[in-house]
Structure formats: structure tokens, C-alpha cells
Length: 357
Image (tube, rainbow, N blue to C red; front, side, top):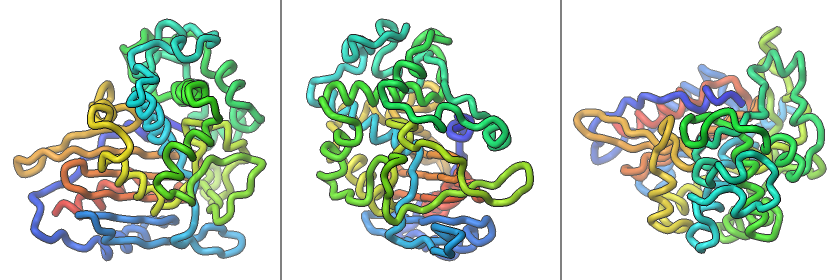
């Protein structure tokens, strides 16, 4: 909800890799215990899952533990699925990243119609105003979250919240903004002639066998979905997330999944099974704020060697997520949490440094 949480540049303490990396088991267990982590962690290296474990409770009131089958709200990891769907349309010759919004949404009424390209939407440089003005938990508790606590169709989200006057010249400024991905979601719907959830299911989920992944709606009960909790700043107590219509996060943050399903997706995406090599290059080329087309891409150096890291975090109240990939070392860390008790930016970086020892 706060772009600064996403834009933090991580320092990963990497040293030259050994023939066999040390097991992360003891470190992860200790860190999770000391920092009150609740959720699931899966670590893959060299094509093999070397660590997987669940911590904490999926439902505090009923003392229901998280386990391997628990589904989690994955928040802005959704954006990486959205960008992948757009790039698949590019590979099919149906979307040109450098054409403006009007080429795909001819009835779009916003100023961005002829000024903002698909690439700029993907890279958060559109200049569209952000409709998410919730700065912190205290203001959300005090004032509510009007955009998310009233029902809105995707068409309403587009017309009411993603069609405003530009606040910056397109391509000149990085501004993390859910409105960008609302527009992208509607482009997918228009080009696919189906809803976003159906396009996602048909294009990615079903082909990969991701049967524990989908799009949240207020009127649907998702079995095995972890409840989410955040810590109140006005008293320090853990409390259920504020009521909201999850579908209002739409193509920017409405998905749920499991750690195993996200690993399937990560392996397919970074293994070149979903996109052409050229579209993968587009995806992973960092622009402003070191942001590619749906995720951050960093380069860090240690002991004279450079390592590239792709990172797709997410956070909506108590839902916290990390999809973290070492692009040149075949190592992936996935963390899904259902509370905000743990700093996952720090946690995932420390797990990464353990892997690269």
C-alpha cells in the first residue's frame, strides 16, 4: 500500500559460492521464531527444494495452524502475473508495448489515452495519479479505506480511479501506483474478450497446474485461505484486517496462492516457458527505480562478482509476500505471510545471503 515498502533497495551479503551451499534450516527457524513470523517459506536451489516449512496460525481464533496446503493473499505478486499476461499478448503480436492506451481501450476517457504507453503502465512511469492514499495503519483505522470498502466493478475502477489527469509527464518519474495495473487489467480483458480472472486461469494457471491459485472476491469463500492480521499502531495488539472488497485490488493485488504454486510459476517464468526470450529481456530490464516490467531487478556485487536479483514483493495490511529470484544462480525464495509482524524485506535478503555463502 505504501510504495516505499516496495522500493527499498536491498543489500544482499553475497560471497563466492561453494560447491554445496549451507542448509538454511537453522537460520530460518531461529529468525522466524525471534521475529514472530506466521506463514510459509519455500527455498529452491539448483532445481531442488532444499527448505519448506510453515509457521504460526492461519486462524488465530480457532488455533488453526498454517500448513503446506494453506492459501495466502499474495497482494502485489499479482502484478507480475498481470505483466506476464500482457507480455504474452505481445508475443502473440496483439499488444505493442510502445503504443498508447487508446490503441487497446478506444473508449478510455482519461488524459493518458494518447499520451501513456503500455510500457509506461508496466513500469509505473505513466504519470497517472494514485488513488491509494492510505499512508499507514493508523490513518486506515481512523478514516477507513474508501476505495476498498465499497464495491466497485473493474469498469468502475477504471473510470473513477484510473482515468484522472496526469500528475507527471509520462516516462519521467517512477510512481508506484495500482491505477497503472487497473488499466493493464482492462487491456487484458479487452484483448482476450474475457474477464481478468478467466484470462489468468486460461493463460497461466491451468497450463501450469496451479490449482491453488485464483482471484479473490468478497462473494466467494476460498477454502484453506489464511486469515490476515496486522498490528495496531494505537495499541500494539494484533487485529484482523480491516473489512474490504478484495476484488477492488483487481489486476494489481487481488490474487491468492500457495508457496508451491508460486514456485511452479517462478520456474516456468524464469525458465523461459511462458514468454519469449525477447519478452523476458523486456521484463527484466530495469528502468526508473530499478523496476522492470512488473518487478524490481537489482545487480549487486560481492567478491568481484555480480549477481542479479529479481524481486516481487507484496503487502496489503496483514498479507505480506516475497518472490525473490537469483537470476544467475538458480535460487528462489518464496515467503507468504498472514501477519505484518516480520520485516520480509530483511528476512528474504538474509535467506538469500545464506544461500550464496
